[in-house]
Image (cartoon, rainbow, N blue to C red; front, side):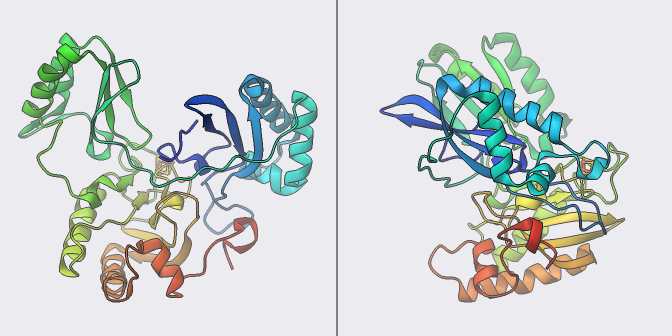
Length: 352
Ligand code: SF4
């Protein structure tokens, strides 16, 4: 479920999504998006990343019936013969979006309305303190790669343990691998903030580029990994920061994601620059996603090394710095400049 304008859970990565629609400050229902998914298999063009299809609006009271109908339709209609084509996204393409939707309406006894207008303006987490409607406070902190460990000069794990001793609310992990210390009473705010600072949970300065970068775990944790991701990311971001700085764009950023294999857990297939592991030190290099997470990027170069990727980025970012229109994001620029074609309907144009 997502509350616009922040697409902070990356709805197009998921099979079933609810976009919250509010009127006069009250939740009235959801736009339902079905059939997103980012996994594919190298060399198998019957697999591809896909954005979710917008089925339309439902009222709040129909939510559970609708969710059950989507799940049972996929259960009954999904491909149980070929595991690589089992996901809902392939069922939609095989039976047709309209047919799937009509079956869901029949099973749920619900008719979808016109989708209600909404806008996504970004995907990152809202770092720092936010006050909730119940008067409690929530502190979001950046955790590089989502690893809460004790590092030299940055005792994140000990810090969390110390905060837990006095914190009466929750710890929530975000879909962007960060941490929310949630439900803090006003009287505990200063103490928790002091502990978070003392243990490096509130870092003095993290670049926009680092905040907008993410990787899956890959090696050594994941046996499916073909290339490094989590262990490569910090150094890759440092290089990228240097390239942005060199071209006068130190305060800009690119949604940059690395995933160790085409299963796509690092959600590189919704990034402006997405790297998909191909072999040790080698990646397929994708360009042209957008900042809102509503466009799949296209393969630009196949099976290239880390050095070649950074050289390509240096040239492209230089071009972006020189030719961008006011505020134009990198992913939009590479499409306007004709570096890659946009992916509009990935079942048909992802491999074009
Ligand atoms: S994308 Fe591949 S390597 Fe990365 S965590 Fe998922 S399965 Fe493992």
